[in-house]
Image: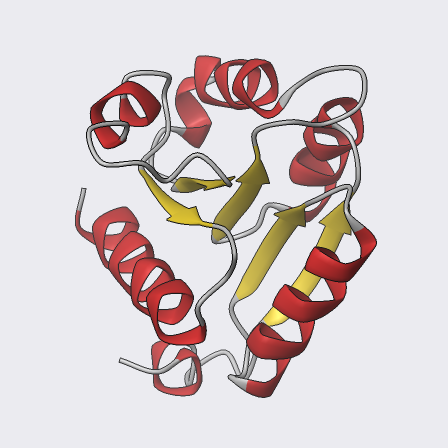
Length: 137
């Protein structure tokens, strides 16, 4: 399912919140997702992520784990604490993609993860899977 067919009836693109403090990673992910038909809103801190999340109500969140001030784990827990947000998937963006760490990341409240450095197809697959889970739960 592509973002266009997923939202064809409303004529709107699927909105994704990208929470990333590294400028180059932010530019790269934004470019990849924009070229693939997604509408990107962004935040650079955990505190800003919560504010933007509540204002924009994205279909999915890509959350860096290591952010200035409030980290991505804390921001995710705060977002997920509201039962109205339970079906919105939050995927961790992490440089800690070592084997065996998936369970640790998922146990912190994330619905999936994408390891850095970003690989285009893995990113797109994780988003498709996340959006599929969010729609069916």
